[in-house]
Image (cartoon, rainbow, N blue to C red; front, side, top):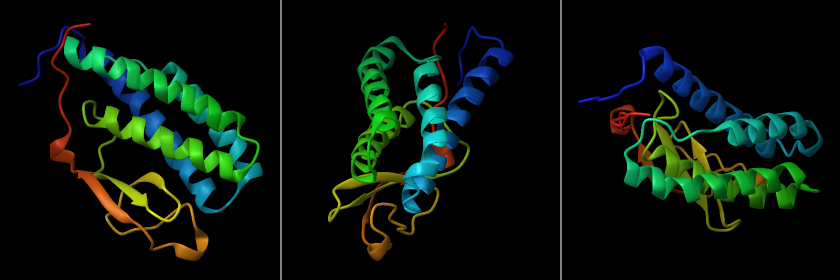
Length: 164
């Protein structure tokens, strides 16, 4: 059951913001996969902007307190992603951002699609994917190297239950 004091318009705005955040994340992932460091800057700037604008809305108090630190970590990691001087630094920051974003997604719906957290043990990097099949963005020579860590189907996404 969904309990909320927000208007449906307010919920729509919050969901649209989370959708933009996740879409911006996926654009950065695509750039990393293509080793497009120079071209990635525009997407990284957009992603960092979405992260900075991200708000924890529609959560129970205990979830909000727990995710406040995760959200702050994600903001710090997004700033590091933005200031990365090379692809190696970008990949490190991207993996850190991925872990924070997935932790948030376990409590807040960010997309209507199923999403999978995946990991490459060789590169020690995490990424999110719409597909269970491994398509490693960190190592072009090892596209299928990696493992599925956890997945979230559409039905797994929680509904907001708090008033804000």
